[in-house]
Image 1 (cartoon, rainbow, N blue to C red):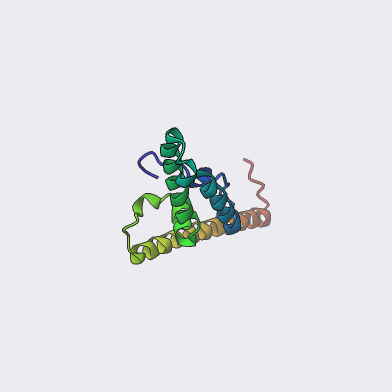
Image 2: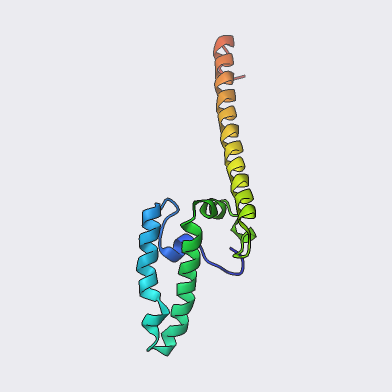
Length: 130
């Protein structure tokens, strides 16, 4: 989110846990509200509506795509542009998936190690105090 862009979830008024249906519903509601054609008679609001509508469109294009959303949630969206080919997007999705998998494996190993340490202490009668 470089260039002073704001959070896509905030643009749509959603939380990070929002479902696909909630994203679609928020997009439709906001797109209708801020569509530039609705504000054409008010020149002062026309520029703002155009800007907001573009932000809404951009937020929806990322959050409605499962792969792009996972990249965005991982904080890597700045690497994506509209000109990127699908191959690069697929590569980034795979990288995010690998990072999540590695993190989950690390958590499991830590829990397993803690359980083994607890077992060792109980067998040796060591309560951890000096």
